Amino acid sequence: GGLDTGRAGGRASVSGAYEATAIVDVREGRREAALQGFRAAVDEARVAHADFIVAGIMLDARVALPDEPGIIPWLEEARSVFERVGARCYLERLEAEVPAVVAAS
Image (tube, rainbow, N blue to C red; front, side, top):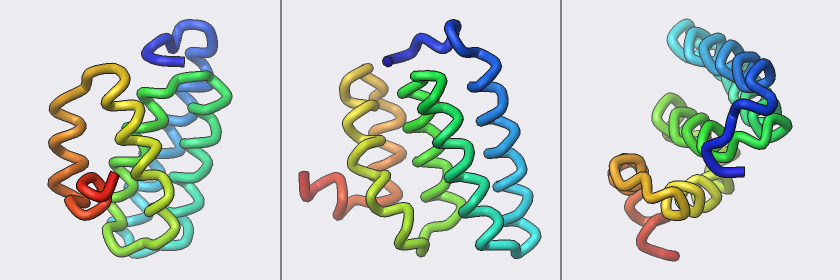
């Protein structure tokens, strides 16, 4: 867990490729493809045990697709990871995106 991405760096790289493709999909109006891409990125980063990368992808998905209800369950998990590793700037960014979710916990 945590910040260690060295054990499965290849998987973390694959997750980055999925996330980049998802962002392009958002910009080109392919919402469902983007959501699938973010999910694939999260799944790959999970396999790599890269918790911080997982949380970052979750936050990026919220920013890219702010009204997507499928992302809501990810936000508490992302907050938990950011708190655990002391990532204050990420917590602040998450709070700016979803103040109600952060405040409710």
